Length: 390
Image (cartoon, rainbow, N blue to C red; front, side, top):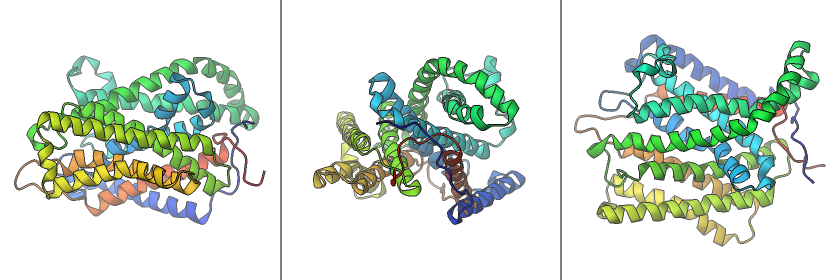
């Protein structure tokens, strides 16, 4: 019997939560310091490496890990598998927070972030051939769409026990949003398809500066495939995490199926990538025992490992599907990180390693995302399912 989504409840300021808030506060203070001293003094970025940790990790990798809402929506609404509906809200929450943090990372990375508002408004100056413009517009729009998709969870809570004015507004808007939700969901499936593939297109512009094992005309397709596999994996991770942290019954049959989709998606990705490298004549670079060949094989081993784990554990347990999901997420994250940083070589004399403030800002933003997730699921109806003692 399917249960309605309900707030978890319980105290918020636990020891773990205070640790998250402390890391987030350190990150915010360093962000203020970055704006005070500039990018040159606070980062390892240069003219040779204009894209660093904040883009490769927080945006390129972070948005793929935040594609759980997109991936589950495809299963529920496109393939009409309504049994996965209990996973929609937590997946959308993860996506909304992940994309919001990615947008914050872009703002920190920009030299003139106060001009971001001009991107959607100065439409007469748009370069319609720019992949970066499409990424910027789609991510901006998708953040807005995700919070609209999630808004019924907030309004359901406020319409019952919110402040009087907020209660009246929520009661009036909730039916309207629910009726319009099908169109919002459709837009929410179009936008990630566009900008996730364009993140791959963006690195095609690097040309010979990108190693041949990663430079291909299939980059848009490969990036789209990785975001789907990572999206399903992160839904499994989030569900298992919620079960362990909040004492909820895991939706085992659903999680097992999603983990299988993620694992087989990784195999399809490897097949497509190897076929492309063989056709282009670049597969021989994989035989070199240099940094690039080593990283290439590490990626492939990580993609294959979840399938090996599935064969080793024919009767999956919560722990085995959790580990499998983590490996899929790590494989996709490493592929994207390598494409933007490791496989990128601007030429002799240029080197990049993230500065300590760069690393702590990323850690702080991730901690802020986790703290927001815990606060929202404890106060609003996001998670469905029963507690372990029920």
